[in-house]
Image (cartoon, rainbow, N blue to C red; front, side, top):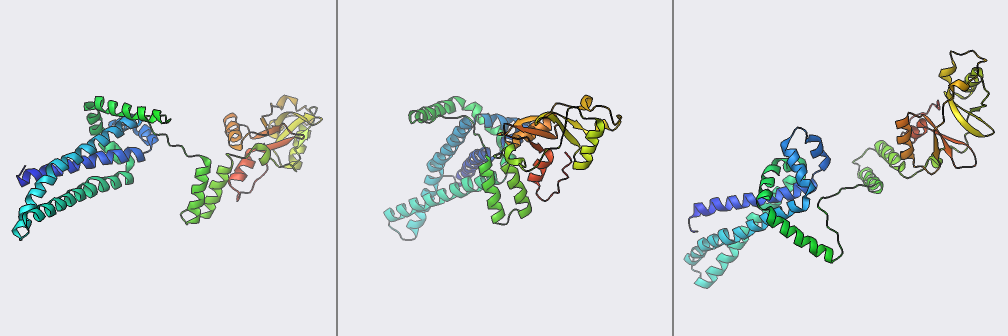
Amino acid sequence: MSNPWVVLVTTVAIIALSAFFVAVEFAMLAARRHRFEDAAATSRTARAALRSSHELTVLLAGAQLGITACTLALGAITKPAVHHWLTPLFASWGLPAVPADVVGFVLALVIVTFLHLVVGEMAPKSWAIAHPEASAQLLALPMRAFMWAVRPVLRALNESANRMLRRVGVEPVDEMVAVTDPASLRHLVEHSANVGALDEAFSAQLSQALELQRITVRDLADPAAVPVTVPTTATAQDVQRASLDSGHLRILVGDAGAVTGVVHVRDTLMSEPTAPAAPFVRPVYELPGDTLVATAFAGMREGRHHLAVVTGGERTLVVTLADVVERLLPQATGTGAA
């Protein structure tokens, strides 16, 4: 192929194709799948990107196949053409035929490698990493079309790679699972605070929130606190008096250290002072002492329980939503009005 314009147009097309496959590969690796799920209801490109994320190994095989084909095409078309143009130029400068041919070959290889590496790989890679979801959706439909056209080849390549992995004891997966555990998040928060990227107050709150993933309700409950309790025979006036003395809105009900229920003082306000409080007693929410605070908080919020009794210990312990909030926001002043 000696026509320089044909070579130029062909080279630009090959480098553009290489850039396309590189961008697809890195965009799908960096993108967050949940963002595709959020947009899938209204966006065709988001649905295409979501389908690709579910068969990531096939997509990567397609991207690698495309990049390899582009590299071979540049080596078969552009490099010989550039070599063919440069060798006579160096010969015209007085170089012997063999040195001119060698210099032309090396320089052609450098030029083609530079164009492919910088324009066809590094630039699209940086763009895809900087805008993963946007680039993945932009390129999703043409990549799905390419995968459809060469799917038998991609499946054969993918199965070959999977068999090799299984032979060395590695179980292949078809999609990437990104899981960030509390320990990793805790390290990220600490690092962000140390380098000044996260305000110290926010860092403390995030750290406290992450702590809730490993501390239990027994750790959270104050062992020195004495729960406010009225007997099962208590009257409305007894409940109101206990509420005034303690500042709590919810009063435990029980005898001999055994809690049988809880009553909200609000429910007794319209009753006669000597009326029994038993009709207003509700079942108390109980939690084993080894329940994680995060799990307890979710259960209390779902069941609308503001107070829980910790079981499994020698004495009665109580945790409230206010205790959890105070652990999350140490600066906040708890009212104790459980």
